[in-house]
Length: 111
Picture 1: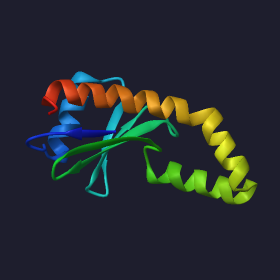
Picture 2: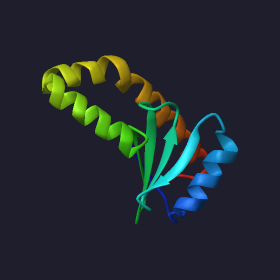
Picture 3: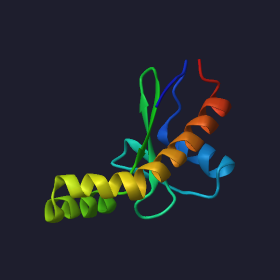
Picture 4: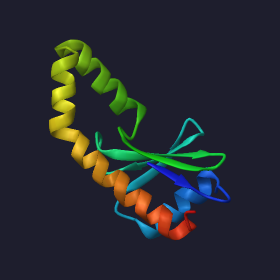
């Protein structure tokens, strides 16, 4: 989900805003580029600052979760892995994404 902004805050500003306004998730900065909102090991969202706004995606909230899912897909096959992802995690990841995106839109005054 793309959020257009006039001025884009830094990762630290985004993290502190989310920690204050949405304390039910754990937050971290991954690779110096992403702000991750973590509900559980496999459920979360990532916020990526761009030059003209923010991109918020439902995602695995850590590199470890992404690696575990990739290994699961290799072990069981792509189709089975995607079906499990759709059934077990996609809906919850999208709920976290929507909640984080709505808060950021409201607090940062999306254009």
